Length: 142
Image 1 (tube, rainbow, N blue to C red):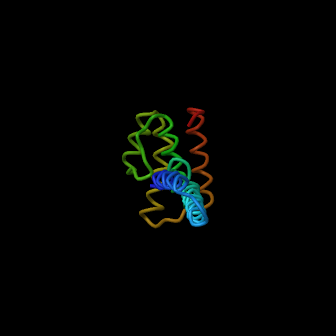
Image 2 (cartoon, helix red, strand yellow; image 1 turned 90 degrees about the horizontal axis):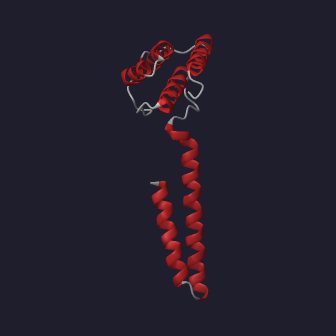
Image 3 (cartoon, helix red, strand yellow; image 1 turned 120 degrees about the horizontal axis):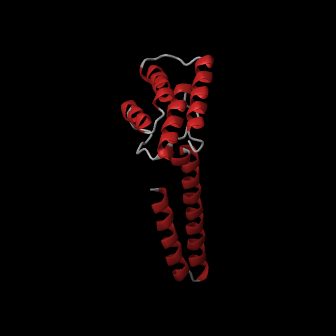
């Protein structure tokens, strides 16, 4: 929606440039430019907060962040996953791409944290990082 809004503002700007004449036209043009700048700023802020590809992990608990990173790594390998994919879908993709073993432990921790109310300890978070490194080691592009 942000891109469409920017395109709409650009069309409005082009129309305003054609219609701008005299002090009133210049004031309208200034307002259009201001609106365009605000829309572009909002779109950039939204993209930055969302993170790259929708798989942002900023502010997530450790197991949830590891799960998102797992999904992102699988997506790079060709899996058709989104951040909303179910754990079973993520595991099926992990098995399909030959990284089932480390993935199962990450998914188990994610389910326990997200649906079981279990807090992830710092040692658990370190273990999840090690599993992600292991996964990357099986394919450096992951």
